[in-house]
Amino acid sequence: MANQLFLNLPVQDLKRSVDFFSSLGFTFNQDFTDENATCMVVNENAYVMLLVQDYFKTFTRKDVADNTGSAEAIIAYSVDSREAVDEAVRTALANGGSVSEDPHDYGFMYNHSFQDPDGHLWEVFWMDPAGAPAEATAGGESAGQQS
Image 1 (tube, rainbow, N blue to C red):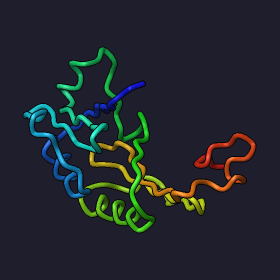
Image 2: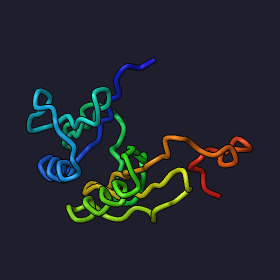
Image 3: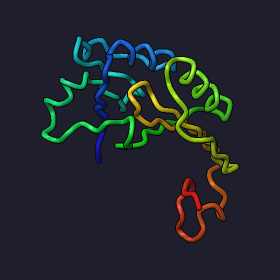
Image 4: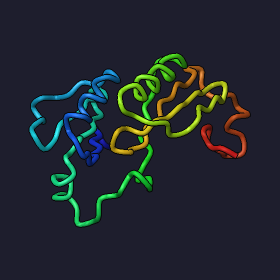
């Protein structure tokens, strides 16, 4: 089982990305920060490495996705309340992000999403600590699966 998670994302403008995610309350580990990259701390075991696109390219032989027209992944993180979900999205939009999807309210779970300035898709969600009601997961469907 993995002990830590590092997600690597290409960015066009490192300072713009740091400013954007700082506005959302994220912090950065300066020990892993230079002109090519920074380490955004999600929690003590999860990090997002924001890598300038040319530097990102040195880690892969594949083409780097153009996030303006295609999706590579949806990165989701939880917050403590429904209000915090909406506040995170408002903050993202006010600081250079754009709308991704409309909010979804499943009763026991609420989520909303945005795109960061580089077009990466982010979903912010709150889930009731009591968990999903039995009928929400009946039939093997995932709680967040839409019909």
